[in-house]
Length: 316
Image 1 (cartoon, rainbow, N blue to C red):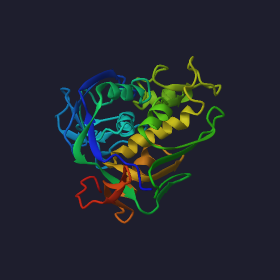
Image 2: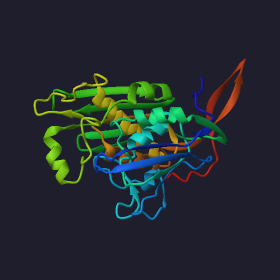
Image 3: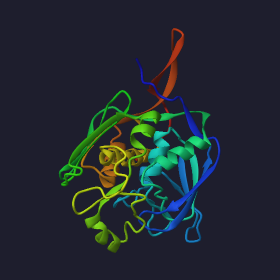
Image 4: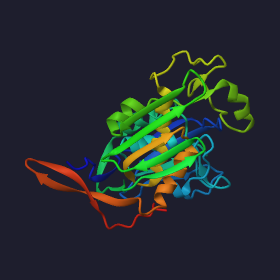
Protein backbone atom coordinates (compact mmCIF):
# COMPACT_ATOMS: atom_id res chain seq x y z
CA UNK A 1 0.00 0.00 0.00
CA UNK A 2 2.85 2.43 0.75
CA UNK A 3 2.83 5.30 3.24
CA UNK A 4 0.71 8.36 2.57
CA UNK A 5 3.17 11.21 3.06
CA UNK A 6 3.33 14.77 1.87
CA UNK A 7 5.84 14.95 -0.94
CA UNK A 8 6.99 18.57 -0.70
CA UNK A 9 8.00 20.97 2.04
CA UNK A 10 5.73 23.77 3.19
CA UNK A 11 5.80 27.23 4.73
CA UNK A 12 3.25 29.91 5.62
CA UNK A 13 1.51 31.87 2.87
CA UNK A 14 1.67 35.13 4.83
CA UNK A 15 3.18 36.61 7.97
CA UNK A 16 1.34 36.84 11.27
CA UNK A 17 1.86 38.03 14.85
CA UNK A 18 0.56 36.94 18.24
CA UNK A 19 0.92 38.38 21.75
CA UNK A 20 0.47 37.02 25.24
CA UNK A 21 2.36 36.28 28.44
CA UNK A 22 4.91 33.66 29.37
CA UNK A 23 3.39 31.04 31.68
CA UNK A 24 6.57 30.83 33.75
CA UNK A 25 8.01 34.34 33.43
CA UNK A 26 4.68 36.15 33.65
CA UNK A 27 6.08 38.72 31.19
CA UNK A 28 4.30 40.11 28.13
CA UNK A 29 5.74 38.87 24.85
CA UNK A 30 5.01 39.20 21.14
CA UNK A 31 5.95 36.71 18.47
CA UNK A 32 6.08 37.25 14.70
CA UNK A 33 6.02 34.47 12.09
CA UNK A 34 7.30 34.88 8.51
CA UNK A 35 7.37 32.49 5.55
CA UNK A 36 10.78 30.87 4.98
CA UNK A 37 12.56 29.14 2.12
CA UNK A 38 12.80 25.38 1.79
CA UNK A 39 15.34 23.69 4.09
CA UNK A 40 15.26 26.63 6.52
CA UNK A 41 13.40 24.62 9.13
CA UNK A 42 12.05 26.43 12.18
CA UNK A 43 14.33 29.26 13.31
CA UNK A 44 13.87 31.57 16.31
CA UNK A 45 15.49 34.97 16.74
CA UNK A 46 15.23 37.09 19.86
CA UNK A 47 14.70 40.76 18.96
CA UNK A 48 14.52 42.27 22.45
CA UNK A 49 17.23 44.51 23.88
CA UNK A 50 18.56 41.78 26.20
CA UNK A 51 19.44 39.42 23.34
CA UNK A 52 22.27 39.27 20.82
CA UNK A 53 19.90 38.28 18.01
CA UNK A 54 21.61 35.03 17.07
CA UNK A 55 19.55 32.46 15.21
CA UNK A 56 18.31 29.55 17.33
CA UNK A 57 17.32 26.53 15.31
CA UNK A 58 14.48 24.37 16.63
CA UNK A 59 16.56 21.20 16.85
CA UNK A 60 17.31 18.59 19.49
CA UNK A 61 20.91 19.78 19.56
CA UNK A 62 19.70 23.19 20.85
CA UNK A 63 17.57 21.82 23.70
CA UNK A 64 18.68 23.24 27.04
CA UNK A 65 16.20 23.32 29.90
CA UNK A 66 13.54 20.61 30.28
CA UNK A 67 12.16 21.48 33.74
CA UNK A 68 8.40 21.97 33.31
CA UNK A 69 8.93 23.15 29.72
CA UNK A 70 11.25 22.73 26.75
CA UNK A 71 13.76 25.49 26.11
CA UNK A 72 16.16 26.14 23.24
CA UNK A 73 19.53 27.86 23.36
CA UNK A 74 21.83 28.87 26.21
CA UNK A 75 20.01 29.96 29.37
CA UNK A 76 22.96 32.30 30.07
CA UNK A 77 22.61 33.87 26.62
CA UNK A 78 19.99 33.85 23.88
CA UNK A 79 17.35 31.26 24.66
CA UNK A 80 13.63 30.71 24.13
CA UNK A 81 11.59 28.75 26.67
CA UNK A 82 8.26 26.91 26.45
CA UNK A 83 8.46 26.16 22.74
CA UNK A 84 6.56 22.86 22.91
CA UNK A 85 2.99 24.01 22.16
CA UNK A 86 4.12 26.13 19.23
CA UNK A 87 6.32 23.35 17.86
CA UNK A 88 3.43 20.90 18.21
CA UNK A 89 1.19 23.19 16.17
CA UNK A 90 3.81 23.50 13.42
CA UNK A 91 4.33 19.75 13.17
CA UNK A 92 0.65 18.99 13.63
CA UNK A 93 -0.40 21.38 10.86
CA UNK A 94 2.37 20.25 8.49
CA UNK A 95 4.47 23.43 8.42
CA UNK A 96 8.17 22.74 7.77
CA UNK A 97 9.80 26.15 7.36
CA UNK A 98 9.17 29.36 9.28
CA UNK A 99 11.20 32.27 10.65
CA UNK A 100 10.13 33.42 14.11
CA UNK A 101 11.00 36.71 15.81
CA UNK A 102 10.23 36.98 19.51
CA UNK A 103 10.76 39.94 21.84
CA UNK A 104 11.25 37.93 25.01
CA UNK A 105 12.66 34.73 26.43
CA UNK A 106 9.47 32.66 26.46
CA UNK A 107 6.82 31.77 23.88
CA UNK A 108 3.41 33.14 24.96
CA UNK A 109 1.26 30.49 26.62
CA UNK A 110 -1.99 31.78 25.02
CA UNK A 111 -4.82 29.62 26.49
CA UNK A 112 -2.46 26.84 27.60
CA UNK A 113 -2.96 24.76 24.46
CA UNK A 114 -1.92 24.90 20.80
CA UNK A 115 -5.34 26.05 19.58
CA UNK A 116 -4.40 29.73 19.10
CA UNK A 117 -1.37 28.79 17.01
CA UNK A 118 -3.42 26.38 14.89
CA UNK A 119 -6.07 29.01 14.18
CA UNK A 120 -3.44 31.64 13.33
CA UNK A 121 -1.66 29.28 10.93
CA UNK A 122 -4.95 28.42 9.25
CA UNK A 123 -5.71 32.09 8.74
CA UNK A 124 -2.22 32.77 7.35
CA UNK A 125 -2.47 29.78 5.02
CA UNK A 126 0.06 27.09 4.16
CA UNK A 127 2.08 27.17 0.93
CA UNK A 128 3.72 24.18 -0.74
CA UNK A 129 7.34 24.64 -1.84
CA UNK A 130 9.30 22.99 -4.66
CA UNK A 131 11.76 21.02 -2.50
CA UNK A 132 11.14 17.46 -1.37
CA UNK A 133 10.34 16.80 2.28
CA UNK A 134 12.62 14.39 4.14
CA UNK A 135 11.61 12.03 6.93
CA UNK A 136 13.32 10.10 9.71
CA UNK A 137 12.09 6.52 9.42
CA UNK A 138 12.49 4.31 12.50
CA UNK A 139 13.83 0.91 11.42
CA UNK A 140 14.33 -0.79 14.80
CA UNK A 141 12.97 -0.32 18.33
CA UNK A 142 14.80 2.12 20.61
CA UNK A 143 13.84 2.45 24.28
CA UNK A 144 14.92 4.51 27.26
CA UNK A 145 13.97 3.97 30.92
CA UNK A 146 13.99 6.51 33.75
CA UNK A 147 12.81 4.99 37.02
CA UNK A 148 9.18 4.01 36.57
CA UNK A 149 8.93 6.05 33.34
CA UNK A 150 9.91 4.91 29.87
CA UNK A 151 9.66 5.88 26.22
CA UNK A 152 10.34 4.06 22.99
CA UNK A 153 10.33 4.45 19.24
CA UNK A 154 9.41 1.48 17.08
CA UNK A 155 8.85 0.96 13.36
CA UNK A 156 5.36 1.81 12.13
CA UNK A 157 3.77 2.50 8.75
CA UNK A 158 2.90 6.11 9.52
CA UNK A 159 3.41 8.67 12.32
CA UNK A 160 1.81 7.49 15.54
CA UNK A 161 1.84 8.65 19.16
CA UNK A 162 0.81 6.45 22.09
CA UNK A 163 0.94 8.23 25.45
CA UNK A 164 0.09 6.91 28.92
CA UNK A 165 0.06 8.85 32.19
CA UNK A 166 -0.51 7.79 35.79
CA UNK A 167 -1.09 10.41 38.51
CA UNK A 168 -1.84 9.79 42.16
CA UNK A 169 -5.12 11.67 42.13
CA UNK A 170 -8.58 10.36 41.24
CA UNK A 171 -9.06 13.38 38.98
CA UNK A 172 -6.52 11.93 36.56
CA UNK A 173 -5.43 8.43 37.56
CA UNK A 174 -4.18 6.31 34.68
CA UNK A 175 -5.11 7.57 31.21
CA UNK A 176 -3.94 6.65 27.73
CA UNK A 177 -4.46 8.17 24.30
CA UNK A 178 -3.19 7.00 20.92
CA UNK A 179 -3.52 8.42 17.43
CA UNK A 180 -2.01 8.36 13.97
CA UNK A 181 -1.04 12.01 13.67
CA UNK A 182 -2.54 13.99 10.79
CA UNK A 183 -3.42 17.68 10.61
CA UNK A 184 -7.10 16.83 11.06
CA UNK A 185 -6.50 14.60 14.08
CA UNK A 186 -4.15 17.11 15.69
CA UNK A 187 -6.54 20.05 15.28
CA UNK A 188 -9.60 18.16 16.48
CA UNK A 189 -8.29 15.72 19.09
CA UNK A 190 -5.09 17.22 20.53
CA UNK A 191 -4.58 20.95 19.90
CA UNK A 192 -7.18 22.23 22.40
CA UNK A 193 -5.87 20.25 25.39
CA UNK A 194 -4.51 22.66 28.02
CA UNK A 195 -1.57 22.46 30.36
CA UNK A 196 -2.47 21.51 33.91
CA UNK A 197 -1.20 21.70 37.47
CA UNK A 198 -2.04 21.31 41.13
CA UNK A 199 -2.94 24.15 43.47
CA UNK A 200 -0.82 22.51 46.20
CA UNK A 201 2.32 23.04 44.08
CA UNK A 202 1.79 26.75 43.39
CA UNK A 203 3.90 28.26 46.18
CA UNK A 204 6.80 25.87 45.52
CA UNK A 205 6.75 26.68 41.79
CA UNK A 206 6.59 30.43 42.43
CA UNK A 207 9.56 30.21 44.79
CA UNK A 208 11.51 28.40 42.07
CA UNK A 209 10.62 31.05 39.47
CA UNK A 210 8.04 28.97 37.60
CA UNK A 211 4.33 29.47 36.82
CA UNK A 212 4.47 33.23 37.47
CA UNK A 213 2.06 33.76 34.58
CA UNK A 214 -0.16 30.77 35.24
CA UNK A 215 -3.87 31.39 35.75
CA UNK A 216 -7.23 29.74 35.22
CA UNK A 217 -7.24 31.39 31.78
CA UNK A 218 -4.27 29.32 30.60
CA UNK A 219 -4.14 26.24 32.85
CA UNK A 220 -6.38 23.50 34.16
CA UNK A 221 -5.95 23.59 37.94
CA UNK A 222 -6.69 20.73 40.31
CA UNK A 223 -7.63 21.82 43.83
CA UNK A 224 -6.84 20.36 47.23
CA UNK A 225 -10.11 18.39 47.04
CA UNK A 226 -8.93 16.72 43.79
CA UNK A 227 -11.47 18.62 41.72
CA UNK A 228 -10.88 20.79 38.66
CA UNK A 229 -11.50 24.35 39.84
CA UNK A 230 -11.89 25.92 36.37
CA UNK A 231 -15.51 27.00 36.02
CA UNK A 232 -15.80 25.69 32.45
CA UNK A 233 -14.46 22.27 33.37
CA UNK A 234 -12.53 20.10 30.91
CA UNK A 235 -12.50 20.37 27.12
CA UNK A 236 -12.09 16.60 26.76
CA UNK A 237 -12.91 13.95 29.39
CA UNK A 238 -9.24 12.89 29.17
CA UNK A 239 -7.76 16.33 28.57
CA UNK A 240 -4.77 15.57 30.80
CA UNK A 241 -3.33 12.75 28.69
CA UNK A 242 -4.17 14.61 25.47
CA UNK A 243 -2.10 17.53 26.70
CA UNK A 244 0.78 15.16 27.45
CA UNK A 245 0.46 13.98 23.85
CA UNK A 246 0.51 17.61 22.71
CA UNK A 247 3.76 18.09 24.62
CA UNK A 248 5.23 14.94 23.09
CA UNK A 249 4.35 16.09 19.56
CA UNK A 250 6.07 19.42 20.22
CA UNK A 251 9.15 17.90 21.81
CA UNK A 252 9.62 15.39 18.99
CA UNK A 253 9.19 18.15 16.39
CA UNK A 254 12.74 19.11 17.43
CA UNK A 255 14.06 16.12 15.47
CA UNK A 256 14.34 18.56 12.55
CA UNK A 257 12.30 16.26 10.32
CA UNK A 258 9.06 14.37 10.74
CA UNK A 259 9.43 10.77 11.77
CA UNK A 260 7.85 7.65 10.35
CA UNK A 261 7.31 5.33 13.27
CA UNK A 262 5.48 5.02 16.59
CA UNK A 263 6.43 6.89 19.75
CA UNK A 264 5.12 5.35 22.97
CA UNK A 265 5.69 6.81 26.43
CA UNK A 266 4.60 5.95 29.95
CA UNK A 267 4.65 8.64 32.63
CA UNK A 268 6.71 10.83 30.34
CA UNK A 269 7.50 14.52 30.30
CA UNK A 270 9.76 17.02 28.55
CA UNK A 271 12.96 15.56 29.99
CA UNK A 272 12.08 12.00 28.95
CA UNK A 273 10.86 13.10 25.51
CA UNK A 274 14.14 14.93 24.88
CA UNK A 275 16.20 11.98 26.13
CA UNK A 276 14.27 9.52 23.96
CA UNK A 277 14.72 11.66 20.86
CA UNK A 278 18.43 12.06 21.52
CA UNK A 279 18.71 8.29 22.09
CA UNK A 280 17.13 7.65 18.69
CA UNK A 281 19.19 10.20 16.78
CA UNK A 282 22.51 9.02 18.24
CA UNK A 283 21.84 5.42 17.17
CA UNK A 284 22.34 5.64 13.44
CA UNK A 285 21.36 1.99 13.02
CA UNK A 286 17.88 2.76 14.37
CA UNK A 287 16.70 5.07 11.60
CA UNK A 288 17.20 6.10 8.00
CA UNK A 289 16.58 9.35 6.15
CA UNK A 290 13.96 8.99 3.42
CA UNK A 291 12.00 11.15 1.04
CA UNK A 292 8.98 10.52 -1.11
CA UNK A 293 8.46 9.62 -4.72
CA UNK A 294 5.42 8.88 -6.84
CA UNK A 295 4.59 5.50 -8.24
CA UNK A 296 1.71 5.39 -10.67
CA UNK A 297 -1.06 2.88 -10.00
CA UNK A 298 -3.97 3.06 -12.35
CA UNK A 299 -5.62 6.46 -12.36
CA UNK A 300 -4.09 7.65 -9.11
CA UNK A 301 -0.64 8.18 -7.63
CA UNK A 302 0.75 6.93 -4.36
CA UNK A 303 3.38 8.34 -2.04
CA UNK A 304 6.06 5.84 -1.01
CA UNK A 305 9.21 6.29 1.07
CA UNK A 306 12.60 5.68 -0.52
CA UNK A 307 16.18 6.01 0.65
CA UNK A 308 17.34 9.56 0.08
CA UNK A 309 21.11 10.18 -0.23
CA UNK A 310 21.02 13.53 1.55
CA UNK A 311 23.05 15.12 4.31
CA UNK A 312 20.96 15.44 7.46
CA UNK A 313 22.31 18.21 9.71
CA UNK A 314 19.78 17.42 12.43
CA UNK A 315 21.21 13.96 13.07
CA UNK A 316 23.25 13.88 16.29
